[in-house]
Length: 163
Image (cartoon, rainbow, N blue to C red; front, side, top):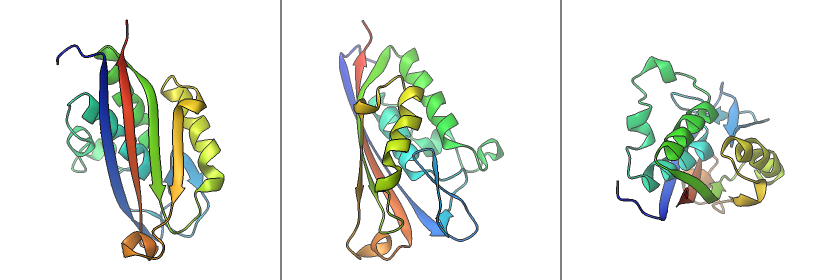
């Protein structure tokens, strides 16, 4: 990889809402009658951040690094996977400057849980909670997210080379 001062990555994820699963977003358990379907805990926000970090490093995506065909990742805590990816960021000589995210969900409302998400993720990534922006959006009743069938997330990260 070329020695660049800054690297930017973008990540995106979507998971279907289903009954019989806990809802985990941003490393936080959110009380709701449905959870996200997936091989791991399906934490849509953490998955988007992972893909943004991997993209910034021009590495594989989350599905290649943690394949759903590998039982080691069955019901895995996505925060642990995020820590493994952050270790790769540091091994490449970078630290995270900032992260900007959107959680798109018609229901449940995400806003009340954002402070806890930031407090969960920031120390794991060597950040102050002010270095992570998490915004809650809806789809105004449009598409699968707007019909409360799924939740999606977007993330952008800026990495800076450690001097």
